[in-house]
Length: 303
Ligand code: GLU
Image 1 (cartoon, protein in one colour):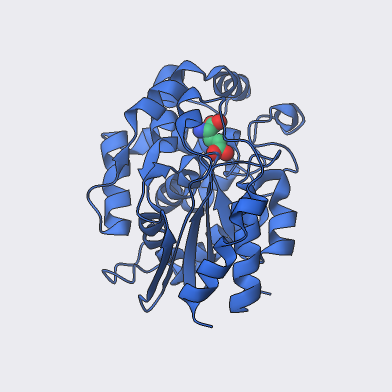
Image 2: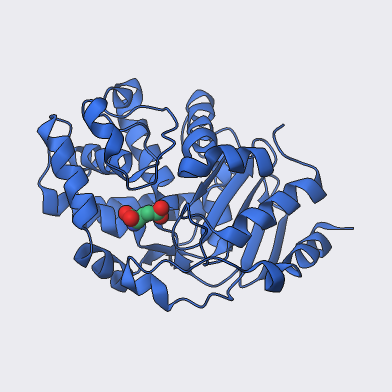
């Protein structure tokens, strides 16, 4: 069976397994159809496989945290780890609970507190943060059409009490330096980036290619840094379900509450899947099932 046939076969399970709830705590996300499904895989030697709504844009939400982390790591190197740790949290993505005992240092850069610290770091470096962020995304994907979904960003800004609380709590420990509204504005734009599965898989392919863009040959981050970014995704990319994802799928990955998951096998391929209904942990329910089937059928996890 070839890869396209495997994608179609795995998708056939969707009607029976499309359980879960589309995110609505950011009201604009609730408008997306629960039946949507797309998948796109691309190999480091640029073979591409697509199925379903793979060309339709969706809100990548927390998946974008890997991109902001990459930008901050490029600039801060090891210094970054003084402000954010690299341990799995075992708590939900927007949890405040560990920050008190951890002295305002987020457990990892993949949960909201850690991503807010990473955005705070970037505000100190970037002359025009939103423009510079998009320029970075365009350079990775080779696609200038990728942008923010302004409706989603505005919707999140209006419902940001919890993220505002995280910022102020971390500020009380000296781990936030910039103005709260400026930081929230940047963070909400980051999470509102809209991409299709195809654009997502292409954007993340450098992490499957030892830090080098297979499209331009540019070294985005060193091989050593790539190892660390993939390790963080493996251990923290699916919040308090990172263990379950490693157990079932066996790849470094990152989810978002827009229903996307991107995962990659180093030196081999990157795959992005989109199915909006989320499980109770905030991860795409069918997305996880699909990727579990994908690595089982194609036979290529990292384990
Ligand atoms: N923008 C979302 C939030 O801050 C990101 C959460 C996610 O995708 O997991 O709540």
